Length: 269
Image (cartoon, rainbow, N blue to C red; front, side, top):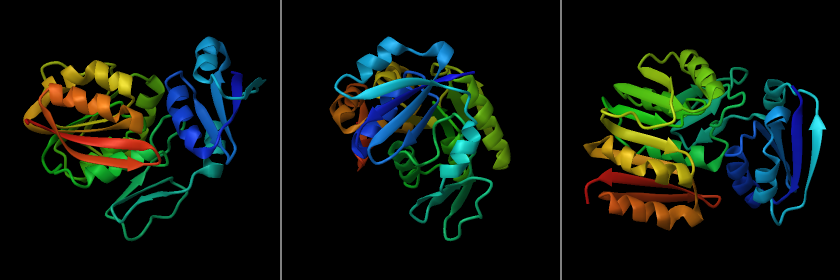
């Protein structure tokens, strides 16, 4: 299948914002340089009007390119990600990294979540401060499954990981197996499961999805539970904090990295 290649003039700071916007429009791959972002879309499912609207004010060009070996392109550019001395995310062709508590193997293919993006990095760093031992965890929008895998490594008793993308489901199942995990359930689902209660909820998605599902997430949270959000820009801070407080959640941690944020809430004011 051919792809539509969209080449956008943008500095590195703006590229991070554009990646979030274009990911929501079903972009399946990105390449970054210091001055340009290149995004790829399936030719038969290219939302041209929405992409043009998202890129208002930016200079960009659109071309059609032949089918690309995404794994080969990824392998050329994927370096391990190290989150302090807490965890490392690497591919199968990297040697294990020394001096970290948790060593995670990820083959992202077309799924989101390697730790390279600031939001995934923030989520992993935030998980260091959460007591996951023996806890029931819900990973909403799992992508590659990296957060679910880290949750099990941190001692979670069970992890339910969901995503709306079939490719992400296949990819996360592969990554779960490659990391020897046995307490993670992967499901194709676009909603919060009703009638279930979780001690910890992880959601690395965007503002609109969080706000739309916030009441259901609160309903699924155990009485002394914890929610960690990212996928949020600094401009989203007020809306998410306000919505959380309205639902009776208390903000206990607010972290920022490259104009992206993570917010950690606990149940009860």
